[in-house]
Structures are given as C-alpha cells and as structure tokens.
Length: 167
Image (cartoon, rainbow, N blue to C red; front, side, top):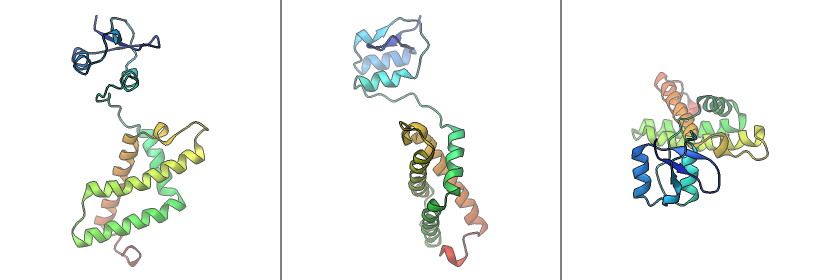
C-alpha cells in the first residue's frame, strides 16, 4: 500500500507516489499528515499543503478547453473590449514595423484584454460567489491570450492590419 497524505481536520486522504512522499518529508510535512489510508482523492494535496504553509509545486491541472473557447468568443465579440483590442493591435503593428516585436510579450499584452474580458464575463454570467480565478484559472486565461496572439500573427502576416486604421 502506498503512503497517503491525510488532512487533519477532514476525513479525506490522498494517494501519494513514493517520489511525492519523499518530497513531503524533505519539506518538513509533519508526520501526523502521512498515513496509510485507502482513499483516491488527489486534488486535495494542494489544499493540504497550502493550508499548512508548506510551499510545494502544485499538481498541474490542464487548462479547460471549453471555458477557454467560451472566454475567447466572449472577448472577441464584445463591443467594449473591441476598443482595447484595437489599441493592442495598433501597438503590436507598430512594433512589427520597427522590428522589435516579441511573441511572448504580445501574449502578455493580450493577457490584459483577457483579464478584463474574464472580469466582465463573471460580472455578467457568474453567480454571487463566482470569481475570475474560479471560473477561468490562470492556465485557461493564458491559453486564450496565446490563442489571440497566434490569431493576430496570422492576420498580420496576411496583411489584414496594413490599412490606415491600424497605423
């Protein structure tokens, strides 16, 4: 039976690999947290470690593709966010013409747009206790920003932003 990380105040436990078990021991996780309990709940590891103040690399969850697509469609079709998007496109076109364009920095620019879009989406469609971080985690928002960046690059290479309105 593998070692299990047990949460003190709840009856949940998490199956832990041998490597992760050793990792916890090195980080000073108290021995009362490590038990042999046959339960299959994994995501609670991060909650246990953050609750007890132990810093460890979290179990990485992949971005939610459906939520990313929903947010991307919302951002690209909203009238108020369109003004911000055109300002970002003008800025990036200027950088392309100067020869100082960097793709990872363009994704950071689009991240501002995605953040505003996520806030607006949560205000409009979210419940009373929904937050941006809960509905659209960081990885999901980053996926949307990278998607918008790649879409911008395709359009810019085709010459769709060469008219005077984007100069």
